Image (cartoon, rainbow, N blue to C red):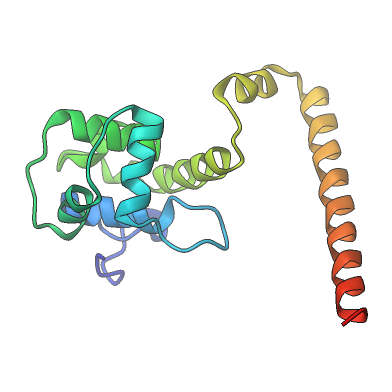
Length: 161
């Protein structure tokens, strides 16, 4: 993992090598409460999201810097999985964009794990401001109801033991 002392923009570490970038993405491209993605996770996602089959060992070798010159197909597949542009993996990538990349990566991880399709997301984004606010309110209400149900279920299981 890159040394966080050499911070880039927005608290993002200076990502200089391909290994730094892949390791950083594996660490951050996951929803809150979940640990970093493993090479096995990335291998699975590359097949699932990009239709490309690469072994966990190949991913591990890239993330550790043991392999430094992958083909463009693996770069394209990694870009699809992590929701970044392929240029992100090259030295010429603009460091000014790293703060935005961090937010994109986290959002993509949430969407992917919630199994929200691109069609569903486009439909949501196509709503006017009032429609999006009504949708957000509905999500808040469902989240509150689920939290209450989960809390009540935990109270029952601890009371019946």
